[in-house]
Image 1 (cartoon, rainbow, N blue to C red):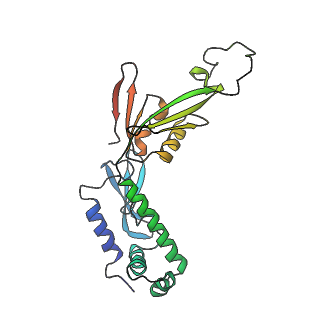
Image 2 (image 1 turned 90 degrees about the horizontal axis):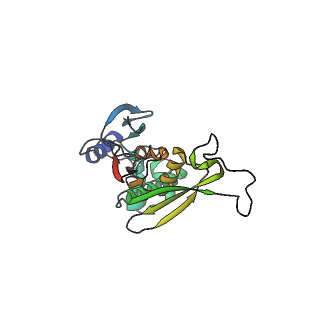
Length: 237
C-alpha cells in the first residue's frame, strides 16, 4: 500500500497551515529565524535557525510527526491501517513491507508526540521562582572560629557553607514546589525550569544572574528590579 501524497506534498501541506503567520521558533516563539538548509537524508524537510536562542528546528519539530526515523508517508500509512482499518501490527507490517518493530515504534512515538502536542495547547501558567540559601550540617555544633563576612573570596552571604533551595509557586492555584539543588548556576536554573514548567509560561524572578538566560529557554521572563519593585520585561523576540 502507498499513499497518493508524497513526502514533499505532506510536508508542504503541514508547512502551509503551520506557518500561516510566518515561521516561528517552537522553543521561544520568535519570528526572527533564518533558513538553514535541508535536513540530511530527508531533503523534503526545511531546517531553520533561531539566532537568539541558538536552536535549530524543522517543519515537523514539536508536531506529532517529529522525531520519526521513517518518512511521513509511511507513518500516515501505518496510522491509517492500524486505527482506521483496524489491522493488527503484524498485518500492517506485511502490508507495508516493513518490520513489525518499525510499526510498534511508529505508533508509540506518534502517541507520545500527540500527547505532548496537546499539552502544549493548554493554557500557559504564571510561575514565581525564588531561591534561598540554607545552612546545613551545622545544627547542634558550636562555631569553632569567628565567621568572616562574605566567607573570604566566596560570594556574598557565605554560600560555600549553604545549600540553595528553589521555590516555584504557580499563580492562581498557589501550588508550591521546593527543590534543593547543589548550586544556583544558570545551568541548574534551566534544569529546574525545563523539568517542571511548561515552555511558553511566564516566569517571575529577581535580578539574580542565574536567571539571565530564562528567556532563551522559551519562557516569557519578568524580573523584579530592587529597590523600587518595577517589572522589567525580557521577552525573547
